[in-house]
Image (cartoon, rainbow over all chains, first blue to last red; front, top):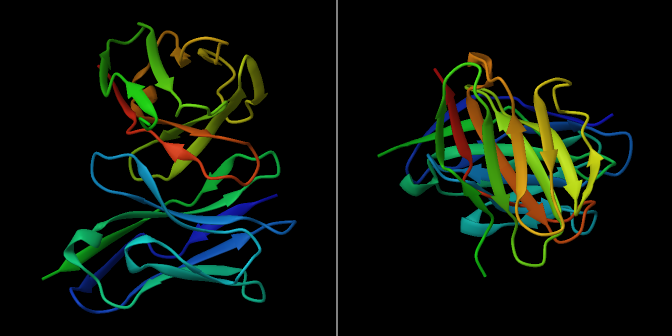
Length: 112
Length: 114
């Protein structure tokens, strides 16, 4: 069975400081992992995806994530937060049938 | 190429009425997924359809909920005899192929049952 756990429901950072959003997964086979972002009253947008190629994945808007099999983690990072990064972020793992299993989300707040 | 289009964006229904949510996938996409987002929760998978076929409906409530994706036209998520607990945001996604491929999401339909 596949599952994903986002360890923090809320993260608050100051503008210009690093962002770390944590995600651990459970999968009985080699998973594909995604991070999606949802801005208020908007649909979800794909930030990045891991599909068993390079373990360090670069996404849009300066975000990146590293797949660590030994730790079953896929944490999302960004060196310097921007006000426009304030949103909700979802870590996602695929099921064997192809649909997506979402974490509960992490709300990122960015203070001026 | 328009993205995934969902309508209506907001839907208000009285208890006992029917709600019909529409989703037009991206052009060329034949795989459609429906998700429900309850307040303070992540998205929960409901159903996965490929043109005219239901591939996986393991997340769909057994009663009152149904989904279709006809050969022509949008995918429809239908909720009969709505109750207050059905109030949520319903998101549709589409993909070009199924397994492990990128899914593109619509902006969602926010259903409020009064």
